[in-house]
Image 1 (spheres, one colour):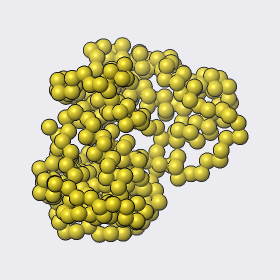
Image 2 (cartoon, one colour):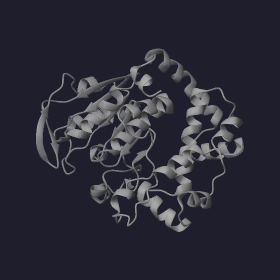
Image 3 (tube, one colour):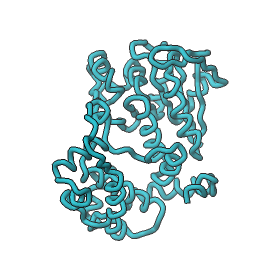
Image 4 (cartoon, helix red, strand yellow):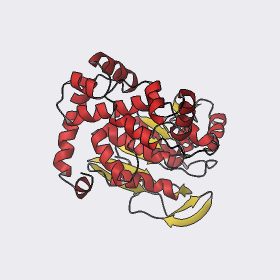
Length: 328
């Protein structure tokens, strides 16, 4: 059982506190502990809305496999007990993640020094100025630095937690959890789509039918011209509308979907790698290997081998759930 300790610090953002509880708590294979020193304030925009107390203390986080730090008021320096807990956890090899302004807590503990990190775009400059040893990227939804992970603002914590589920148990399990909380398993784009102001479209064009068509035809060698023709737009206008609605380009969005599908097939089937490459639109196993090495950091065969055992364990523990039945 993978133990996840969610640290409820004073001034914790209430919504962000519940994100890891919802994601990990509804996924088989996790035990979730909300750990607090005492009764603490749960806030939004600095205003207290309710108080949180828990039967778990910081002692119960000392053996956790993963520690998650939800956002708090960004200018508030954590207590010595919090800093010691995080430093000790890092020293023993535990995975540590932050949501939104929780990155400031990790930075105060020195865990982000020499690393890339993100936080809410509104306070990204403050994080960079306060902690110059940290490379702050305000344009992404989350940053995975291996042992240390950080997410952008508020709802991006969902993306980060689903990413950790994907790392632990594979894309198929993460997709089931995502369906349960009614969100995409992996959102395209990054924080930039929320930082920039996009004027409302003057027409009624919407990309949803085009996105569905692209996903249904990902096994074909689609070009930007093919996609534009399907959308009845010029390639230039398509690219502009695509970035406004998804935060990325048409071909990058398609590549993300192809990689996601390839990961699911490698985890849940015994289909040979060359057939996986063909069915996902990569054309050849060499092209699939190239993109896997670049974006996943391993080969398709090694990826399949790494997740085979965890998939079998999860299948035995989860069985057939009501959620599976609903989504058939």
